[in-house]
Length: 209
Image (tube, rainbow, N blue to C red; front, side, top):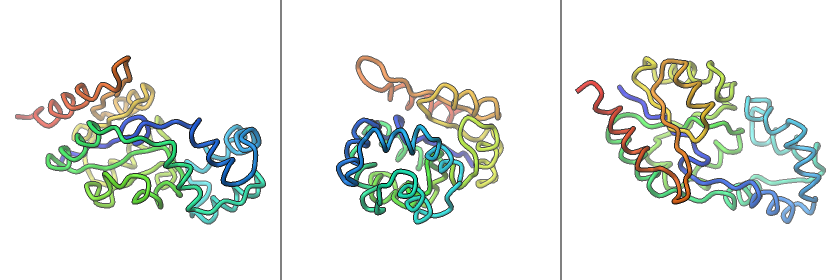
C-alpha cells in the first residue's frame, strides 16, 4: 500500500495569517497586537500543535485565559477559514492520489483544526476518509523525525512506500531523512508549482513498474 501525505497550509490551501488575525480581533474585541503577542509569540499555539490541549474545549479555555478573549469554536473556525484559499490543482491531485493509494493529511495544527475539517476543508474531507493526522494528535511537529515514524505507523507502511507533499523545505528534508519520498511545493511568480507536484506524484506511483 502506498500512502500519499499532504500538508494543508500552502500545499492544499493557501494560508494568510494576516487575514486570520484581524478577523479574530473583530470577533473578540481584543487587539491584534494583544492576540499575537500573548498567544502566538508566547508559544501557546506551538504548544497546542504538539498536543498541550487534548480537546477543542481545553484549547479555547486556554486561549481565553491567555489573551482575555473568549472564543467559541465557531468563531475560531470563521477566522481560520478567512485565512484559507483552496489551491484547486493541489486538491485535484489529492483526489487523484486517492485512486492510486491511501491519502492523508500530515499537518502541524492544534486539535480545533482537526475538529473543524468539515468546515475548513470541505473539498477534501470525503477523499481523506478520516485520515486527518495532525501534530497535536501525533505529539510532535514536522520536521521532527518522530512525527513521520508515528504517521507511518498509523498505516503500517515502510517509509519507502510513502510520500509527503509540503511547502516547507525543512519538512521535506525531515521526511527524506526518515526514508520517505517527498516533494516541496514552491510558489513562483505564476503561483504554486502544482505541475511539479503532479509529476512527483506520478513518478512515485510508477516507481516500481
